[in-house]
Length: 339
View (cartoon, rainbow, N blue to C red):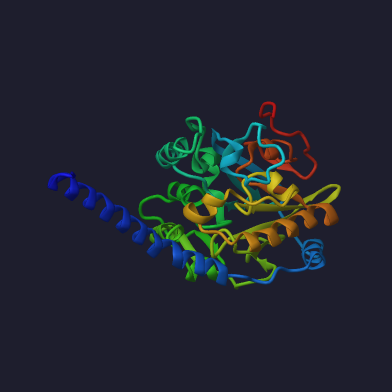
């Protein structure tokens, strides 16, 4: 026979479980409904190629800033269709500094502060990751050139892509950095993006500039740079396209953000793990499959180089060398260890 005390404890435990399920549903259901409402039309491959080739100006250098790295099981970032589940994977937290001839810098994402990176890495250890290795922040990497950061654009508004922007501001700053947000980023958030948007609105050095909802959107003041809203991961997820100028012509690049966390997501049209998409970051994988195939076509049919924010090995094999300014004629990849 169950004692009255034990019965009360069991009932309390059941009630807590029910409350937790209800609370999760209250948060997750609207997020899943909302992400499936976001379906901005994608431009054609020809439209993207024409916009890049028709740009009258463009950036001349790009820097990969690898702020931190964490060894993570591939099963944490690729679904059951992963063709190479036993290969090693290093999840990095990247930002990119894109520079024009006159020294202006447009940041693509901003990484995290050191404190936030440590906290973020601790959460990853619950999923089987090794301790995070924090290397730098965007502001530290830019050093005195932080004053040349005139604009910032975010592939999406998650803390690991936004938090580092805090260090670009100083007390008493005027709004000297244009922060470009597409319409969904500025107007439609969920529980995974609301805090980051609040951070951006609170920083005195930022001037928020709202872009349109869809299409191949030029970034004002930064010719040769565009965003394409794609949704799927967050309501305002987007990819960033640049046409890097050089002696041999233009080198088109696409910064994919978190459409995938591993290049094999694009290579084999593999989504993220089902539990991640259901419970951690509510995603529309049908939409993301469209975007993955779109990105693969940009690479394979139109010659665009893809830069996947979190895949250190893949980034190390691109023409953008880690933590060094590279022009369109530089081709030496950053060393990063064996796969």
